[in-house]
Every structure is written in structure tokens, then in C-alpha cells.
Image (tube, rainbow, N blue to C red):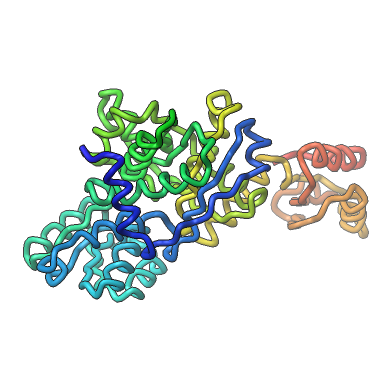
Length: 398
């Protein structure tokens, strides 16, 4: 098993090839969670994610013969861009196999670095099998996204920098997909010269590492905004390190990850993808575990689709009571829409959408049904707006 010395060696090796990203203290998240929270912003890497660390270290260790042959990798996201970029910087041929369903923006970004993108299969497993086939057929070096000692050591440099920049840290909350980042972070923590507890964090629908540790059959699946850590087969090398050095792998619900994305965007002014926000989701889900502790959390990816980000923010606003949708049964007479708009405005809320129905849903030919969505400051304010409307109309919350 590799050691913290391998992480230190990786840090020296990739210095200048990746960005030493800043660590910021988050007053807002600290106040909400009761922990003293420090965020490591690997969203600021050139490709927007921490994966560059492992890719840079792995490619730097290639022999002259391996560089001449080139590399192949399988990924639907951040690992693809990381390998493509660092291969381009070294002048190495890179072939990236991506599943056919991969969003066109990710394909374009990967190809932009000069990689040869091959779309193959409908699943990551099928893409991986084809990547291995190409490696054997063309003599390419396969660069695994997480089950590789050099990749693990490279990912661990994130935690190494975090620990160096915040000497008082006593806890790490690290997202877990295949396990490369959490394994590297645990090694860095072990070599810190002071006690640092490492927790891994998975989304509930893809809790493969937690299931492996518990000795239960791995059962994962379903849609998740944290697609970057939606992994079925965790790495064998990371698993062994996690068994020995990680205190616990926590699982968080999808809802908590959405809340973490919104919290980072609204309070910390940081854009994070689902996988990148999972560490913060652990603080929201298990406040008693982290309260009073000095916690380092990597925000390790920012590659979220704009539409997905907008949907998450709106879903959280609905749950928080800041967006409210109502149905009002109203008399069908001139001026009533103006009255309702005036009452909502007088209560300090902002109308977002109005839908007026006479023919299909109204209970009477003398009545109409109105659907209104409005924005309020918080749940208490929404309740006040509803109460003001209920004094005059029949109101149903959706």
C-alpha cells in the first residue's frame, strides 16, 4: 500500500502543472452547521475539478516508451478532461472512450484538448471494456480514474495542501465515488503529524463503498445530481486504504446534496456540481458529528449543467418556502386579477407566473381558477402572503 510519502512525492512532481487552489473559511456554512468549516476550492482547476491532480501525477510517471505509445482513459466527465489536458501538455497521444449518452458539452471540452474521443456503449462499464480493448490493440497505457496508486497519490495532494494551509484542522469530509480522492486524503491526514479524522461521503443511491465496508452485496442505481460519484465498482486499492485509515463512510440523501449546492451558491458564492458539494451535504446531514470541530471540505468540482443548477436552486427555494404555488377559485368578473396582484404586491411578494383558467377547471361558469407562483423572503413571509389572500378567496397550496 502506498503511504503519505507518495502523496508528498506527487505534490513535488505536479507542482506547476496543477493550480494550488485556495482554501477559504466559510462563515455562512460554519454558522449553519455549528462546525468551523474550511473549503478547498478545486473548482478553480483549469478543467474545473480535482481530477487533474491524479492525471498529472500518473502521466508524469510514464516511461519514454509509454509516452511514445500514448494513453487511453474511460470517463464521462472530469477524468476525461483531466487526462486530455495533461496529455496535451506533455505532447502525448490521448484516446478517451466515453459512453454514447455523454452530454455533447463534455465531449466537446475533452476534444478541445486534442484528445481522440471515442463514443462507445451505453454504460460506463461498456466504455471501460472498450478502452481496455484499445489499450491491448494499440499498445496504449490505460489510465484508471481511481484504482491506481499514482492517481490516488495525486488526488491526495488536495488534502495535503488543505492540511498545510489550515494547521488547526482536525477533520476531513471527503466525497467518495471510486475512492481515489478519499484514499489519498486519508494518506495525507495520516502523515500530518497530528490527529486528523477522515470521513468519506457517498450519495445514498450509490453507497458502494459503504456497502463494501459492511460486507453486504453492492446494490446501487437511480438518478442523482451527484453523477460524478455515481460509481458501482469502487477501486480495490482505495478500498484497502479506506478500510485502514477512514473512520467512517457516511451516506447522504439526494435532497441534502441539492441543499448543499444551493448553500454554496447562495451563501458562499461558489458554484459546485453535485459530487463537488457532497462533503458539505454531510455537514448538513450529520451536524452532531461535526459540531465544534474544525472541518476541511473539498469543493472538488464545478462542472454542473446550467439548467441543472437552475433547477436545483428552484427546487430548494420551493422546499424553503421561498417559492410558492397556489390555486385560487375566484369570481369571473373584470378587475379580479388586478386585485389579486395588488394584494400579493402589498404583502411584499413577487409574482413569477400566472395561469388563468375558465373552461377546463373552474367549478362554475361564474367562476375561474387561477394558478399563481410567487417568490417570498422565507417560509414565514409566504405564510403571511397566503393568509392575506385567504381573507378574500378560496386558496389551495400546491
